[in-house]
Length: 266
Length: 266
DNA sequence: CGTGATGTTGAGCAGCATCAATTTCGGTGG
DNA sequence: CCACCGAAATTGATGCTGCTCAACATCACG
Image (cartoon, rainbow over all chains, first blue to last red; front, top):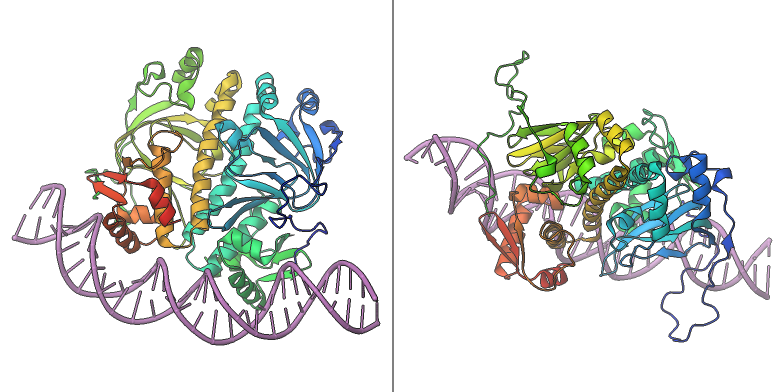
């Protein structure tokens, strides 16, 4: 596996000591027109299932922008004054510690909503979000969203559902980090959880049939998702491969026999 | 520290092989009258902040029961057909793995709501809940709650807030399990997170002043919260005590200098 | 005073992080 | 087409940390 790296160079980091804003600073991306009433992901569980009338109102609030890979959408610790909806693309959601370690919570995709929990709790963001692929992101100011929620009955319920999704994903992470002592167990369950939530959304887990999903992370990122070092991930993946439990081609990861993978490395 | 163990004997386990239901099976606890409009925790963030009118309706749905310590309120894997509200007492929320390991997610208290996320997602419970102390629990059937949510505008929003709380707690767990490599770091941050959410609800963390909180768990349970073995917890607590970072008396745990604890064992 | 639950302390070992060297691969430019 | 570069993956060697097993101490309670 070699994860897709989009051509944009990695984020500038702190190489430049220039204090003045330079022209190379990325400009504010252009505003795109947006029409939720006529969208390809219409009907996907969260907001995209609103009534026609609500969708019209929904189109009138917020702003839609295109974002390049490696664009930081928000950063943990900053106040959550906007709500983000992923119209297309992929976004990785991370938390970091003061000593430089990184924890990758999940990879969010089209239809996912970011910042809802922090917005409801009126706190700062507890995670950071960064695009992995070219993405289209709709951004709604807090106040506008609260007004929107007040004027449509469904919205509160739908927001609750969306946060419940975030919750489940966080819970699964905590569960697997706490319950699995071995590195193999952590990696296996990370892959299994991912496959099951990514593939078919919450379909009853198919028995021992192969599942495959888009793996847009390199081994280092996968490691920071499972709480393991890069090298350990590499060693384990070759082991899984040798045992015929997984296959990797291009950017797809296939779990050949989920049941066996789970049983052997629980 | 010696955690309070309430006199009720531990759950029967699988000692009895008797297949017939015996008389020693705990009887359904008696239904208690409930009046939310006149409750001591009125005003606590989640449901207890509803309008007078909504509270009246709220009193009319669901059933309130007293529960002894070690009573299982629901178990992971079972369908989430009821919503539980803790009126008084303490409830521990856990997840378990097939090989017998236990993960303690949090200790919920008065005003906390259990089962909201699973109820919204229409899935099975992903955690189990068990009383730690004598508790009063209000139970609301799914359908009644959905109806209630439909007829009051605020309820959806408040449900969202409550799930956001659950989310934050799960996220903090995952974060700390993933970001801290050392056992000391895991235990320290477990204590810090707990103190900060339990003490004053979401007050801005007071600088280097002592925080204390009710520690109703024994070292084994604390270990299953931090992802550590019982023995490691014991060793670390004596170390923390020797360094003057924590004090334990009866069932209270005091963090003498949260800032230093965090800095030293991040 | 006996019993069972909980906490303390020690010894040994396995597993994973870390450091380090090398290979593979994709892209870029000559 | 080839040479070159950098990023990512692979593989090996080593040391430390925390789990496990085990023995014992302490406490609450009847």
